[in-house]
Length: 226
Length: 219
Length: 78
Image (cartoon, rainbow over all chains, first blue to last red; front, side, top):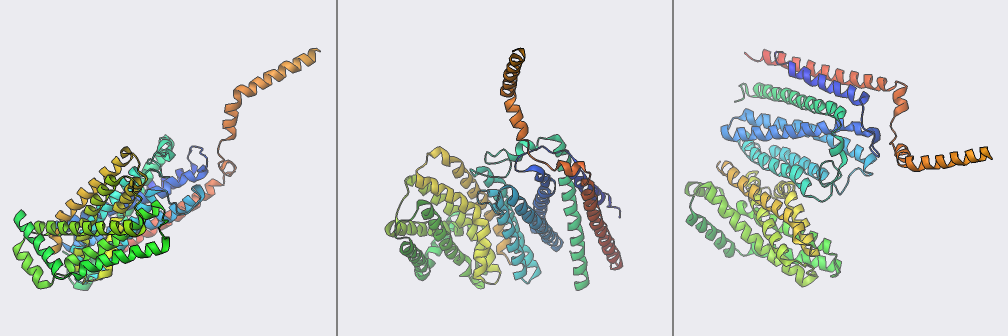
């Protein structure tokens, strides 16, 4: 348990965001009302997802430069953890949108479509992995697809919404939404620690999943994963 | 890396294509029949928005059909032969160029079919042309990589469209937006940022294909 | 008469008051509704404590899984 401290920090930060997220001061806004507090719980999921997908892409690159299967294993685990964060992110986003934007799925919002495309990309990634039986080929092909898909998803989530003329999400398409209200310092003080906490939590889950998979490999093949 | 070899590879591709005309003919037939179905259902009073969307849907699926052949036709023996002769970058550049030319032909045919059977509502033809060209470059280069990936999964045709659909969505969305601008004849200043975005995506995709292909093709 | 006059002045003053403060009063009326009574009754602490306990239990379970995995890893280290 020598690397316990960052797991503890993650738990403390998330716990702090739960407590302060409900008790802290928030700006009084129309339509959003109290639901603005969802910002502390919904948005960090996306940050954790993006970080995990970045980690996945990084380990795919590392695999292609070294051809070590353990890197590919980490890449696939990170993609799984990212997906595990994307799913609640999508569902909570839908619930929030129902009560603030009026519909669970809004056509005018490029960010939502981008995230949906990202989800599809990673489902295809899992499918591709399932289709190729040989370990090394699977690792190589899926690493290539992962890097390509990550770049396209990044374009979709980060760049396309800035080009699109209308968006309901804050910060792009000329919509003031949170861009302005994020400047509220009391909210910032809760929001950023919450993001850090959830990102650390995603790394913790990745760590556990990765160790489990390695152990599984060891028990099946009676040798360490290289 | 050698331009002579790239040209030689391109020549080989075209020779193969014209020797067995059925594959090109089948794609063109697909375009014609789809457009004919559109005509039958819309009776030429199609809305301009829908025109652009339908055109890109036809183009996208024709492109998937066309590009998926670029690696499926290569047997094990021939790919081994290619490994010994060519550098992967030369190989992928020739494939991408060939797919771009093929898709340009398909795009020309589908626009002609639309103009002939349905309508041609585009007001700004130059913008439309630029959109088609940049869109086709992006589609061709990403589909080349995807068809190589799909061919590694044991010649599974259905995985090809599944693989390329999500990665092509940003390209298609930008193309749709630009096509709509071209149809409405909007001012150029509206479209500049989309054209820049599309060109950047082109550069990104081509760069990624060149970088990633060498990891794909060797067994 | 004096009273009447006084009333009138008051009325004018009142109208003037409304006229000049209208924007701010309207803004006050437009203040979005928040769950203020819920907070004032102190019930929010119940929600916060429940959620904290739920989260802490999950975190503790994660720690337990982590330690079990560690034990298993040590067993198979050889």
